[in-house]
Length: 263
Length: 219
Ligand code: SF4
Ligand code: FES
Image (cartoon, rainbow over all chains, first blue to last red; front, side, top):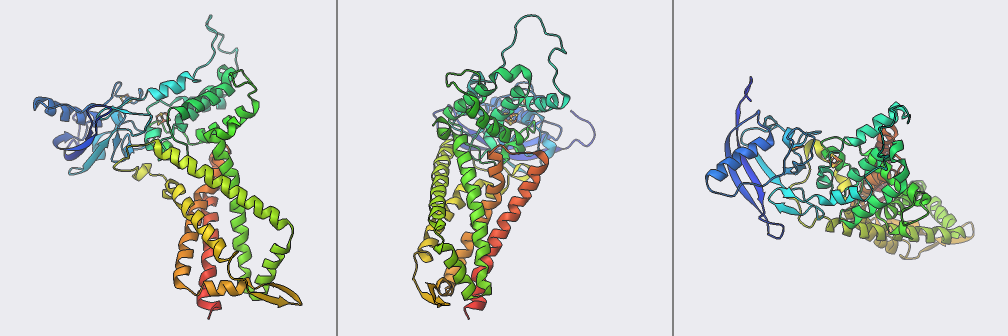
């Protein structure tokens, strides 16, 4: 903290409070004063929570873990934008200097049927785990580490797969999507694993199963608005969705066995 | 078939049928420009179209594809609505805002469907005037056109609906390619712009025609 140019902000917060998954939620207003522009958004919430605890009130529940933009826990929707107004940033990496004193800030959970609210801003994203379990893995040889050059992967393919692998599974794509679709997330996994030789054996099965699981979990369907990619803290390209579509078509044609054999 | 039950399968069906209709509306808009040439050219063109035996095939294909497109669209839209039972109080904005028309596809889509039915009732199944050119009797669709576009309310309603068509195309065109899995970082940006251009041209053409009738030809 500190440094030159540090000022403080006074803000009007409007935060979604919901006691449990079944409860009717509502917004509550909080006037917060003296927030450092060097604070992160989560640190600002910490300050509010400290005050609430002191007053004997229930603090605002929100998910967080790494606070360095890599775990994908810190889900919340800030003035309609998942992870706040700044592109390529998680909530924990969002600084209060992005706001002006006197601003009203509305904070809501990620909203989707597949992401039920646990409490306040914390949502249950285990639907993503189900999608991963249905195909987001590779068959590995569990023996000794293979020779690094045994499987040649062209540089551009590796780079492309790596860009898709940057997805941290935060769910902002779903939260931003007008249809609550998880196709950017699924597309990122399908690209990441399908592009590499290690992921090739399950290529067809993976896309068919992951899409089926996504639909069963109650996510919506992509209508190519591109909001997901704009909201994604890792700026996963919208191209992943187009790729998912063509992979799906390819797998449909190639896959001979619905029980999950490789095409 | 499993593919057609899947959401991607249904959307790919929508993409193909949507692209077919994109081609149709463009040709329809272009053909309509014959009204600027005159009644005879317009009527003869219309006669040429309806006297061709292939017209039944084309009409059947158009009806079938629009039904597939609309039914899939409605089903997907319902699923999508259900995927977020608790709405947001605010939507993405600023740097994270998508193009607004893309969020309203089901909305202008439904408007277009209603308009389409109304449009067919007005013209295709509207009053039958006949006219004879060079000994061939044909429908004087031009006369009906002039009559219909005398009403300012009709003109305004018509323009409103074709603007919706323009918006629908401006997202739909590009979106169809993405749904079919055709995407390239460079060409898709161009395709995206072309979608806007396409929507703009189609809407612009369809807007100019009733205005021409209302202000010039109908006088
Ligand atoms: S694609 Fe982006 S927004 Fe979606 S889960 Fe992955 S990192 Fe989060
Ligand atoms: S807390 Fe880990 S990404 Fe924000």
